[in-house]
Amino acid sequence: MEMLIPILVPIFCGCILPIMIVWLNNRRRIIENNSRTQIVLAAMEKNPGMDIDEMLKKMAPKQKLLKEKLLAKLLWGCITLLLGVGLAIFCLCTSFGGGMTPSNLWFSGFMSTIMIAVGIAFLINYFIGKKMLAKEIEAEQNKLSAQA
Image 1 (spheres, rainbow, N blue to C red):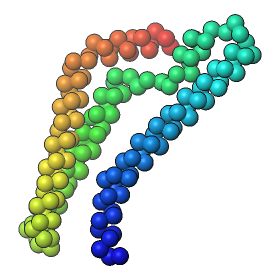
Image 2 (image 1 turned 180 degrees about the vertical axis):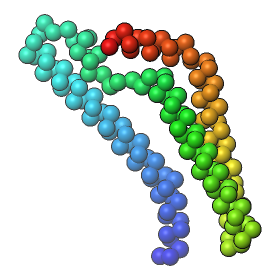
Image 3 (image 1 turned 90 degrees about the horizontal axis):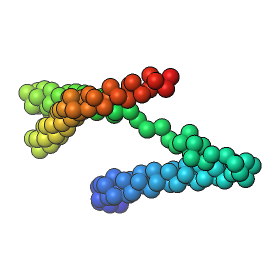
């Protein structure tokens, strides 16, 4: 039994958990779509002259603005970069103080490098996207202020 646990945990984390997440996400979307459909059908039965297109536009899930998407990239870039730097500092401290096997130390250093690289990639994506999408973001802001 003790030999089985180190084999089952990576299988669960690498295979079963992602499949369950995708399945639950798809199931949630299907339920949302079915409930929207039932609402539209009920509205059509009660009021046949109703403008269905306008009602569907009002019921549609709200799309994120470009600015919100860019800010999410900035947030995740800062989080992963800081976590990577923190892990790198931890690796340096443990390498000088001892207390960790060389293979674990190497793995932690490798993971910190990956996290730093992902954080930098998110930040680069944010700054380039901000520069390239400046006109579109301004147009969205003007559109929102005109609607309000």
